[in-house]
Length: 514
Image (cartoon, rainbow, N blue to C red; front, side, top):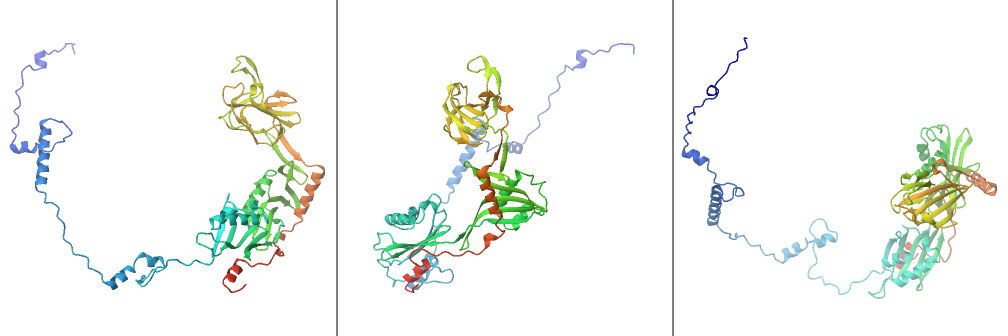
């Protein structure tokens, strides 16, 4: 409390006297034996006393194992009893050969020594087989793979080509063949009969008569009445049309067509009626083919609300309304899929080094990426053009045109008509260019304008005779009654000599008559 300080001398703080050493504990021989490691790790402390002790232990153990090895001696076993003749024949009968011939239960006897092999086996007098024409295959190659000789296969292909072009035979067509007896084993079998459905409306049968193949053309009656399906929308247009028998592809095409005119989700009511007409062919033999959608209509309150028909103008097909107005196509299609790297306006030229007007837009992209026409037009320029390098210019009418520069390759020619989205070339770096990209320009009355400021909107319109033919086609389709395509078909008369079918040919060969 008075502020006095206390102090200790060094001798008082730290004792300078040496502490007596602790006595070491006494260890017995058992403790020392327990601490002795006779099998140390030979990969550690190589050359030390412990390592040499471990090596000695290993050598002692190996020597002990070798010294006490008893050796290898054969084990005596009993011999296999010999089979007598009866047991041998029974055992031989249990081989895989009887199983391959159809036996699967019980005991089956194999061939005995009384069976003598034949030096030459007899051939089948006929071989009946079926071949299928594959995609990219040819009729002659199919016959050769089936065992027909090359010369006869070519002759058959020429004979069939006289009745129907071979290119018209669809992949997957089934061809029934009967091959006859060959004159020698080294020769191919001749064709005795052939039958196939060459076309949807034609069957061909061929039979060998007096040494030559005679062809018979069997026309098949086909009804080409379009299939018309009408029904109430109800809770779901798709489910209702499927229940009425409309193919799924036709319903999907119908929804795509009317979806460009109205909202399928909000503008269609449950009380409306759908009117679907698809291309349809039905043969007298029962087969049917359903083609593309021909007409898409929507009826509300007994009156047509929507009538759409596909029509072709100048080689391009699109859907038109009953009034003759085609679908509206708007918006600028991007000339390529790359991003915009330079816009329209003044800039410093990357090669010339001074500021000047950049009269278009640059799109980056990989070398060889496709370039598309932004809208329909006619090619006016397609070739090398100054600093643009490989250049294409399109005329779209009404004073509008587009240009595409620095292409690596041009895919169109001058005077060619192109459609929106068609590939006209590929990105490159020709002309004054520092790398692969597309220089895209838009012209109005010959002057370059900002491409981002123009939107293309096209709407086709039918006029005159084209409009009259269009409306006549709508009247013809809508005059078809629903279900009219399912009426019975009258059969056609067969042409040529009256020959039997493949089954008849086989029966005649067997001697039973037709």
